[in-house]
Image 1 (cartoon, one colour):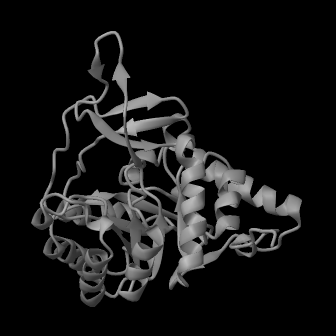
Image 2 (cartoon, one colour; image 1 turned 90 degrees about the vertical axis):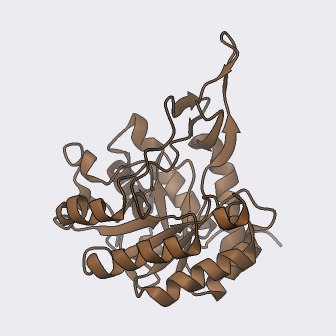
Length: 307
């Protein structure tokens, strides 16, 4: 039997497969479709201080080998999550990680503190989404400047005791510099990577397929990009990396771990197969058995590079 348990900093997971934020709701939407306790963890939909309605539809469209979305960070707000969703999630034997975003450092800190204090014992980690616009910087994303990432990470680190994960944007010139800045500021782990800016057009109507005109591309189309970024980041830092970007099967998950990831997140795959995260756990275990691997964590960082 393969030992599927892994650790991501101080976070202990039953297996390395988590659901990605924004693709699995708050987890409860899927309880009739799969056993959440079979997952390593759930990263819930991004939470802000107050509810946000998001962009007007259409907000999602299918593309060749992927999906385009411009949800607009729609969510119920951290108070409603703590009151209505978290108590039910505590019934399941998997880690609950809250994805957090804000339009200022102060908002990030306030949301993280609420999760740490009111969610004590039920929220197991915080993932900072640094791809959202920094209002104080005129709308530029937090994640494009190493100094801003460091200030944001340090501010949240000083405010909470929970394991702190920073989810890096691929839309930067040097992701290794951003990763090192997050580590030095106190991040316990990094998620790599987020969606890639893109757009789709309906030729018949000559209109964009999304009301927001452009959105974020995810799914198998971005897997080679994400795989490279996981490898680059894992070479640049000494903290664990969580890989995501187009993981559709157990072998995809194994490739991300070989590139340097300690755990993985499954996102777009759940849209055409809601049971994909649990299926991928089984396929990853089967891959390890076929390869004669006793513990899945032995895969991490085993890429063989000649020379």
